[in-house]
Structure formats: C-alpha cells, structure tokens
Length: 269
Ligand code: NAI
Ligand code: 15L
Image (cartoon, rainbow, N blue to C red; front, side, top):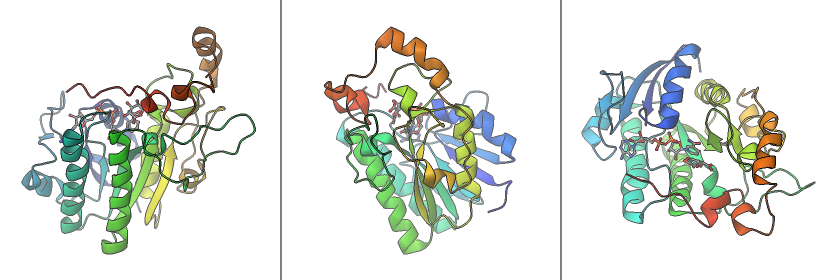
C-alpha cells in the first residue's frame, strides 16, 4: 500500500498515542486524532468514547487506515474491559467495515500470551502462532481483538496487523523490559511497515526492538518490512546490577507477561 496515507489514530492522548503523534508524520502519514480525553495541543482532535458509534462513523470516514490504540491498557474489572476493549473495538471494526477502510493496525499486547513460559538459555524464541494464554482480563480482551481482526478479514476482507506490543517507552526500566522493550522509533517503524506492507490479510506480529535478550520471534514483523534498529542491551549492566537477573522460580518472573501474571497493575481511571 502506498504512503502517505490518511490515518485515524485512536488513543491519541495516551502514552503511545503521544509518541506516535510525534513520529508517524515523518513517514508522510496525515493523522486524524481520536480519544475520549482531549489531546493536548490538538484542538482538531475528536474527543469521543469508543461507545459513541455515531462519532466513530464520522471519525473513520475518508481515512485509508486506522491505528487502534484506544482502550484500557492495564488490568481492570470485566465490565469496564468489556465496554472499552471488547465492545469498543467491535464498534470500531464495524464502523471501519461500513466505511470501506482498508486496514487496521491493532494494538494487541504480549499479555494475550502472557502465561507462556519465557524462554530460558538455549530455548527457541516464542513463535507468533504459540497458543494464546492471556494473563489478565486485559490480555483476554487483546486475544478477543485478534480474533475479531481475523473474523473481519475472513468475512469482510478488512485487513489487520495485530501487534503484540512488548513495552514501548523511551528506555527500559526493568530487567524484564530488556527482553520486551520497543523503542518509540522502532515502534513508529513497525507501525509504518504495518500500514504500508502489501497483502497482510490478518497478520500477527510481536512488537519489540532487536533486543539481545529477545524472547519472541520477530520474523512475521520483519516480513512486513520492519527493520528494528534499537537494542536494550546498553541498559542491561545497570538494570541487572540494580534489580538482579530474573528468578526462574518466581512465577511473576517466569512468564512472558511478567508481574501481570501475579500482580497486574490496575487501570487507574
Ligand atoms: P494509555 O492508557 O496511555 O492510552 C490509552 C488511551 O486510550 C488513553 O488516552 C485513553 O483516554 C484512551 N481510551 C481508553 N478508553 C477509551 C474509550 N472507551 N474511548 C476512547 N478512548 C479511550 O495506553 P498506552 O500505553 O498508550 O497504550 C496504547 C495501546 O497500546 C493500548 O491499547 C494498550 O493496550 C496497547 N499496548 C501498549 C503497550 C505499551 O507499552 N504502552 C504495550 C502493549 C500494548
Ligand atoms: C501492556 O500491555 C501495557 O499496556 C503496558 O503499559 C506495559 O505494561 C506492557 O504491557 C508490559 O508488558 O510491560
């Protein structure tokens, strides 16, 4: 698919949305912004909830693609996750299908497979087709999102790249993040590749940088044209000195999802 493209960015007021708002225009994408909270410095952004189907229909009209980041990004009650992540994502897909939008880049999460044991020394990387093992209701909603994406491709020909993001932030702050870190610049490279690769159907990829301590297989992301340039390893000596290596006998450190499997952070809003 040719760039530049007009792209609806949902979740534009959030942490990742703010990073992507800064980085994606460099690839020639023109962004339309959507969030239930006002987007600072962006008076033209649409302020609406994913539950507002009329606002969604208007927001998707005329865009080539959607980068769907909006939703609850941590653990919460089932009722709240149902409304924002499950019903909200369904409303978005329905609006996109009605409007003939060609492609969605869906912010899935490593927590869709969070109960997968992490590889130890010499183990193979976790493949993208490993069985889903959500570690939270949050992860369960991301698993639903991936199934929804597959359904809209099979039934309606609406393409999706589901990105199981690791942890996207300026630099890794924990030893676990040395394995799952996605630098913001690599995040933008991956989203750009997901927006522009040809014939993706429904493709699932892991979203991380080329970390020396990587746990999962990036080949499906690389097949889209993603070429990560960053590696968390320069942060390793400091973080390991501060926190120690991960303890394989600690359940909160033995799985891909880390502490989400035992003590997940709770959505504060
Ligand atoms: P965030 O919590 O900072 O931002 C989420 C945004 O979605 C917020 O601005 C919020 O107002 C908006 N939102 C929530 N519910 C909404 C609703 N019902 N209607 C409209 N807007 C709504 O989260 P962050 O970190 O920016 O993550 C963005 C996406 O990426 C989320 O879907 C998250 O699950 C996913 N993700 C992020 C990772 C990361 O490292 N930041 C890792 C894995 C997945
Ligand atoms: C996620 O899915 C969260 O949205 C993000 O805030 C991080 O905590 C990340 O996973 C992680 O696994 O560290």
